[in-house]
Length: 158
Image 1 (cartoon, one colour):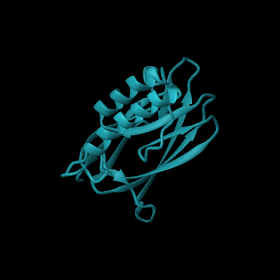
Image 2: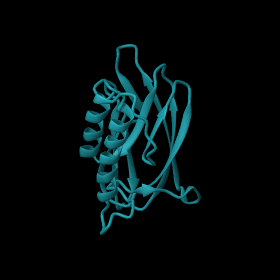
Image 3: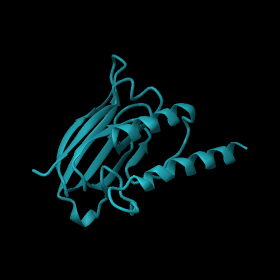
Image 4: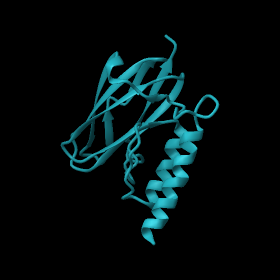
């Protein structure tokens, strides 16, 4: 029963992502862009994720500026002692995902705009920013966003 509910939930979540493209039919593109081609990376941004002694949880850095059309490699390292996520999306989508994660904290993902890392582990996301605007990065493990683990990616023509 638990597997069936989780399957229905995942199917429900997948539909808005595919429909959120910026042109007819979506073609798998999201408002923040689309998975990038590793051979076209023009910038690498190194990010650490960790907990602080005061209870805050942070991305360092947590604010980025990139150009529309640019392909970026986010190299992400979990330097903390807990599992953390890096999710890139529109703020409204991040907040929807956050609410679902609070109900299903062990939900696993296989999304090109997100990665979950255990303590001490590293990973990459290659992303092409096809639209301008301000997008969110966030850790959606329950409690982490509220502890400060989020930031902004500003995408502009220049």
